[in-house]
Length: 91
Image 1 (cartoon, helix red, strand yellow):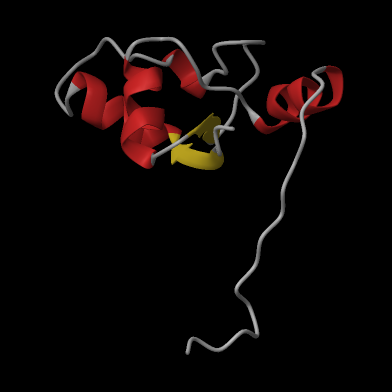
Image 2 (cartoon, rainbow, N blue to C red; image 1 turned 180 degrees about the vertical axis):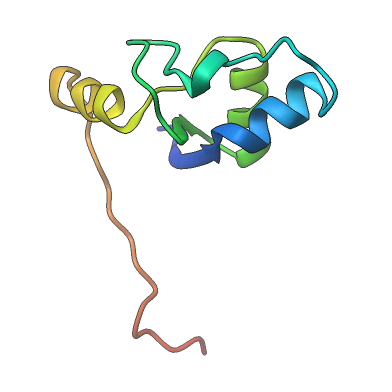
């Protein structure tokens, strides 16, 4: 079983990082979701690591606004395992 985490990325930071601060051509024009075209400030990706999630965005293979991400969660048959270390003390 593969365990995936959800990562969020700031759209302004992504545009600056992927295209450079001096670029007029932005990867995500008007901070639009690649899926639906709505304006968004964050993209959400599920992956094993943050580095993998970032690479998926770079390669245009992932990245959704909150609405599209929620819709994907509702329409796909996914199993969630919730683990929390909150309140637990390490031995």
